Image 1 (cartoon, rainbow, N blue to C red):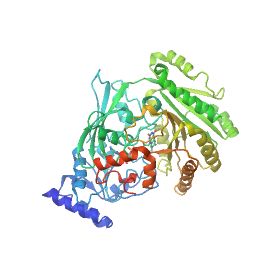
Image 2 (spheres, rainbow, N blue to C red):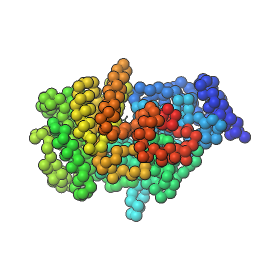
Image 3 (tube, protein in one colour):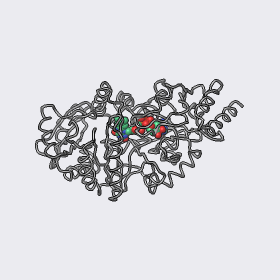
Image 4 (spheres, helix red, strand yellow):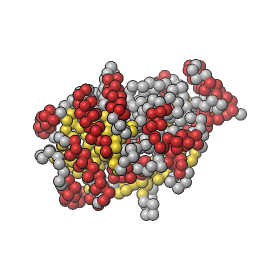
Length: 522
Ligand code: FAD
């Protein structure tokens, strides 16, 4: 009876959502009576904390923040919405490291997954016993951070194979996108390493899914932008963890030579697994910015002057970044293997840089830059990022039209610009993530930081890039996408759009989940 009363009240909230203050009070006024609403907060501090994200360009205030004390609580909240005559929106918020409000829920309820983790209320991180038939794995709560997954698995001499550049992101947040980095060409994105999940659907149902059981939900949720359910547990494959990493950067002044070498190296991951690289990325060095940046401080100080003078001469340099893992006693072997892998590459002679670091130092390389920016108050500035996937056949046109004609000419780019290829066959096309239809495609990331007063200039540049690609037929897809119209979403998913919509009707028919993505409610 109590639940019915609550449900009716919630229906009122939905109907009167334009009367925000009243609705908000109504929503919380029932909190004294019900287990779900006991965990709702609507005070200014709680609401403000989830009304912004890393992008710092959007502000959407929810009605309430939900602090679940168990996985079942999350299910109850969604079920309450689903059963109401007019449902309210629900968004899981991991770290809020999206840039365009994707984890927000205007006039809905934000589930605070970070608080859930901090209170230790989820499934935590459980490394499996040795399972010789199925390999090693770890069961991880969707609210957990990848850095904690790393430390927990290393205690068993194991680690996941696929990472993001930055590890203070939640498992649920990256699996809702894809989770990419320099390991993707070889091990696939993070979504390719998931074996099983627990997901609470938009009907409030608790479903365990895998490629064999409830496979439709499994594939829907991976790369599903939070549209089909809240991931409360993911089972991630593990491999024996290496101890150390040879980390190499090579400089190029010719884009074609740079991409040719990148493509050759990622193909070696397929043909000669035993001597493949473990990581490959690339970045632009431009006269606008310092040659070391928050993503990693790499080049020795003594070489800065000669690198800068080369950048000045060419306007832009292309930096190939690779890594090969090894165990302490195998240093001689890894050096020989690196020599084989890198022989014949066309980088500028003499511009070869190498570091030897621990595995943790390598994977967590972005953290020190973050802490430095935080101490200077520069981490929480606007981030008008643009991340794209580009078919290999069009990367040259992208270079001349975008890097050379927009980025270098406008001269406003601040922050790293990443460029690296990956192999399509390492992605599972049944999953929701949308990628270009070519065997090799590139990711390009414009990871801008701007001032509070000028982020719109970066946004305008991003729009210009997208417009250029559209006009010249370059078939880009956004990664961590942000589109405004249904037509854009239809184009983004292409042949997958129909399935995406069908799955939405199946698993979240009342369009409750992750409204900040603006796919079904823009
Ligand atoms: P949030 O921003 O909180 O949420 C993202 C979306 O997922 C929202 O729609 C939310 O509702 C949904 N969601 C959150 N948790 C769950 C859950 N448990 N179940 C279902 N849906 C959920 N990405 C890469 O791939 N590679 C990188 O190298 C990389 N580097 C980054 C570096 C920095 C500094 C930053 C800020 C971001 C980076 N990202 C990278 C992007 C990052 O993967 C995405 O922004 C991701 O969404 C962030 O995770 P989050 O935990 O903050 O998710």
